[in-house]
Image (tube, rainbow, N blue to C red):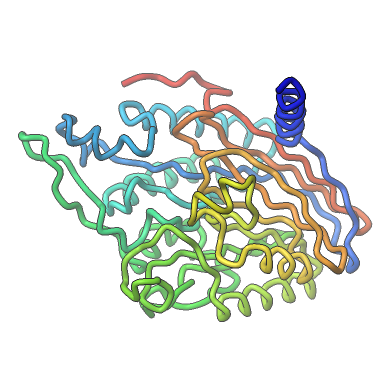
Length: 358
């Protein structure tokens, strides 16, 4: 028993160290020199006040499974954005990426309200803000509202892929160097796009199961798990090749995790690790994508793995913003003479401003 406790203590210490771990390695094909400071937020699960006018027993039953701070979501988001504003000024932060589950259950009004908050942040700071969808965001029939005096749950307007594209057009799609498909095609992966970010290329991968060609029930209804279809994977390969040709360092973003953190994550909590994740780790590393950001699991984790060819992959999970540990991530990349230095830090949402209760 004492030995087990010591082993667990050692593993926990190693995990904490990893949250601010600098990683350095050289790639076979040298990318162009360049620096990047990137902030990532995940799993905001935003729910607007307009849909929660009557917060009774039904409302808290509905939100209980998320364990977010429902009575103070705006305060948490505003504090996190205050830290972003500070780092734009003090550190030269230029990019913010949100890796999915932007809303509670894909409520249209929730997406629209969050987009307005992002727009205000973008206009004030000049920040480049990009989003990708998560399993809660699109074609979700669980979208709900509490707007009648009896406090009962009624259906809210859910968000279609085309709605998502239109709402967040100014947060990635308008700047896209490439897109996989049009969002009204009804095809899996239609919200995938890429961004030229100087010496870097962001590959935003829609791995959601919400269209009949990619869901187990063959319906246009969201499912928890994620899957990169063969067609989307070919597009990703093309983006990695385009990045290499331009001397860019590719960084991939999706909602679903490529690697499991532990046995429970991989074998029991189904739907968190993307389908065929082990094969994708090999494929991504060998195509030159060495960093993949995700969310979904609501925790912070950084892994390091190698393909059979010796190529390194660093999957980075950003924790939930609106639930413990109430944090987001900032990553600093520096590329020089073919060598990539990367540092990953986790910041509390109230790093610059206390969370103000409403």
